[in-house]
Structure formats: C-alpha cells, structure tokens
Image (cartoon, rainbow, N blue to C red; front, side, top):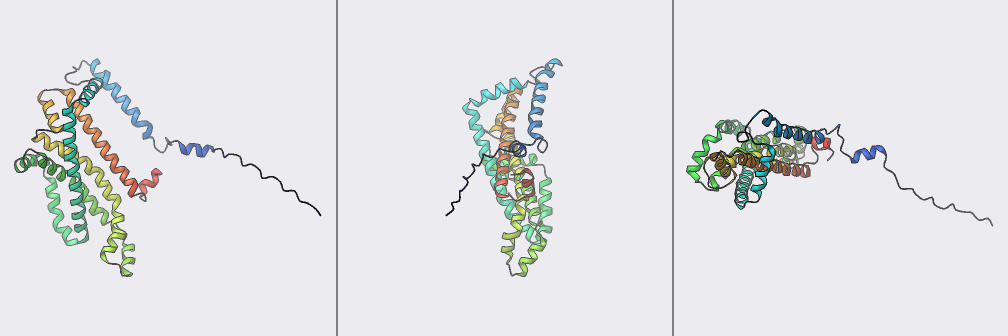
Length: 285
C-alpha cells in the first residue's frame, strides 16, 4: 500500500501594488492639471495684489491688500448682524432657485413636447429675458414691498431662463431611434418621456442648474441692492455709502464662497444622479 504525500499549500504573499496601481491612487496631474494650477494661480495673484499696489503708491483706501480684506472678513464672521444678513440672502436665493427650477422644468417640458407651443411661447420668453433685470427691480419693490418677496421674485426670474433653455434642449436631444422603437412596441407618450426623453435631458438640466443657482444668488443681491432693509446686498450697499472698500470686498468674498458651494452641491448631485454621462466617465467618477 503506497501513501501519497500532499504538498503543503503555499502561503499567498500579500500583493504589492504595481507602479500603475500606485499612480491610480494619486490624481494624475497630466489629466487634471487644474489640481496644481488653481492653487498656484491663487497664490501668485494674491502675492502680486499684496505687494504691487504698495510699490506703485496706490493708497489702501482705494485698493486694500488681501491681508486687510481678510482681517475685515474674519471680523464680520464674529458679528451677529452679518449672520442674520447671510441667512436672509440664503433664503431668498434658495427659494428663488427652487421656484425657478420647478417652473423651468414644467414649462420646458410642455414647450418641448408640442412644436406649435414652442414656436409661439419661446419668442416671448426670449424677449422678456432680453429686458435688463436691474430695470425691473424697482418695479418689484413697488409691487411686492421691501421684504423677501421681491428678492425671491428677482432671483426666480434671473435663474429661470438658463434652466429653461437647457430643459428644452435636453428633452429635444433624445435619440429618435429609441423613441421610434418604444412607439412601435406600443409605448405611451408618458412612457417615452419617462424612459427616453427625461433621462437624456438630465445632463442638460443639471448644466442649467449649475448656472441657475449662481444666477439666483445674483438675483437676490440685485433685489437687495435696489431696495432692502436686510441681507448681504443691503450690507454691501451700506459699505458703499461709507466708502468702506475693505468691507465691500469682504462681502464679495462671502458671495463668491456661496456661489462656489452652491455650484459644488449641484455638481455632487449631478455625479450622483447622472453618473452615466460622458463627462463623468472622463473624470473617472
């Protein structure tokens, strides 16, 4: 009787990451050079701004340095009045953006589905968009008062058009072959909209939302600047009356941060809900 010896199982050595895998864990600066360029440009511009005006003899009253503006910005963060004005502007811009989005999606869907409606209604929308919104702000103050309502209306109107145009363009970009195939199988108009048109329009809609959310903040500030008793636009106007350039720059920094954060939130939502779009695949998200 012969016995067979079984060789002990060899221990599997831990897999060491290859150079290619190591590189994948670190952002590739060749594919995304903005990772390095954005901070470099910021440092260069801030350094030049800090020293060059002084060398040229420009008074700080006319053009304050970034360090002076930052100090005023930090001081504002410790004031309760600033946070109250910030919250007011945030509510106005947020409400205007939501209302503009709902109206743009509803009207854009209706316009894109019926050709005669598009040809009839769209010229009036474009004509209204051509009117300077600053000229409408005083009328909104008269109609809706100095409270938040007039600012919400202004934010809604300014944010509405870019979202609407993208909704219409997105719904009309659907693949006709897919639509014809579903129609041949007896799909209803709503099923075609749900399964083809709306998914195809989502990348366009989010592109419009990225612009619309920034325009909503702009609309709220324009309304507050024309006539208000609170809000960051009102605070900016008060600093203008005092010729306080440093305080004006500090408010502008806050508005810039608001816009970037709002734009980033929409971007995150786009990556979450429109993960199949070509732009996202290029980014590797």
